[in-house]
Image (cartoon, rainbow, N blue to C red; front, side):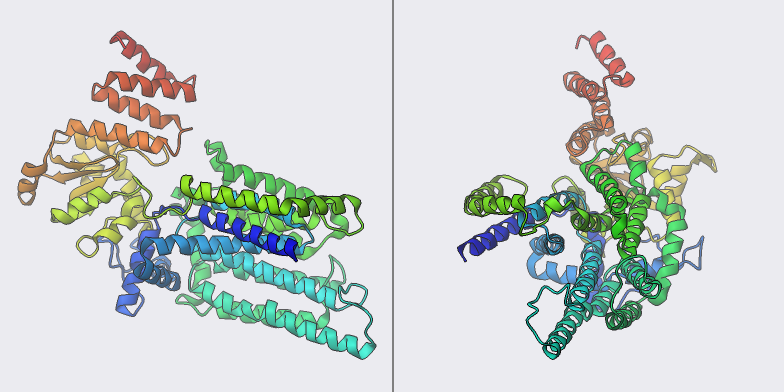
Length: 627
């Protein structure tokens, strides 16, 4: 009894620690427009038919009027968005942080229970959980996809539970229950057991799919999972091959539940039109500009050597190896799910979080016998004895570690990630109203919607409602020099949209390079710098309406090099392996004649990339200056 209590305390503390690991500051750029949309829907009592937040939005895509993209994004996430907005209304940002942590901790608990259900002991199950926690720490954005992460594995957890229970309860030789029952008692026991399994494992599935379909478009993966199970179990039952099949009675319940759940998922604002939209999204040029939509192979080739990719490729290789080694125990259902999710995750890195829990479950199922808990296994018995003796000390150690970590580590944080969003620029705009249209980068659009609507509407945000506007934003930031009616294209586009002020960062979030628009504005006398802090700049256009603002807040544009240097240094803290941040910092410091610090930046660049020619040339130049 004491051992059991100690184990429960240990697991409780451990999952509190996991909850703390997922309780980081608000950091996802798409969170903000979801939050504002939820507030808008709640206040209006209806889903938006047109976009209220961006002045560049139209009711239909001008390039592809038949596109369902605009309606889909405006309406598909409504339930999750209302949940976010009401959580924020009641508990502010801390409520959002804890909601995210609760969803991901529940997912970790489901993974743990699924592994335990495969016969793996407590200690090894927790070892299996480590890569899951590490990976989801990098995919914990505060947006509706959290519900897709949870519901996709919950679906597999329930379906696998039903398959397991019905396999056990339909044959005395396989039953885990005592067999000292007569025939009628045994039939009665199995009927009760089967009814409970239907109620516990199958009955929730249609409700899960209904809720999921109104929270995130990822419910399509739920339909894929259900179809994979239905088709695989049907083939196994009728062919009598390809792995253990469900008993006939269980199969009927399985089919009815799956079909009902798929039909329930079509009760959403976009009904069946979600499917053609996803095909449209995958074939569009806009998708190729989204980092998370790129293949993990492409990202590795581009130099993104991040831990989540290492974990993913290890589990991918291990999973396929285990399937090959256990061909004698081939199960079409498991093989179809694993290979399907493996290929999807290889296609787009944002699908990796859907693959990893399944890969861990497969690893636990097909792991070598020494990892299991056969009671007659001498090694297992010894390991169990060691575990029982270590339980109390481990609980005490974990308790102390938890207290220390809470006080000193990245646990149970609150508020917004510092230097992530243009908070200072938003305050400036609120305090000093600038008339006219704003140009802003895509990645900041959501935050600016949250902070500035209805006083300002954005140029573009993470929804990317009009694909052509997204590509125009790219050409403006890149200061496209192509001539249009005698002026550079970037300037012609700003004129076409009647842009009166520009709020932007100066250093690319992924490239680490200076945004080309910055030197273009620096050299254009029509644009004036009126605000800068550590991460943002505001330029206003020369116009009578802006004269007073320019006189009050205008500053020498050369000062922007200080902002560039600071911003590059801050972003280098997150992407220290990218030499470009240090090169950009050095160039900005060189332009502002801060030679000693410029030298340090170029030296750091050489430490990261010893063969970097730019850093060497700049150091030679600084040496000629006497530094």
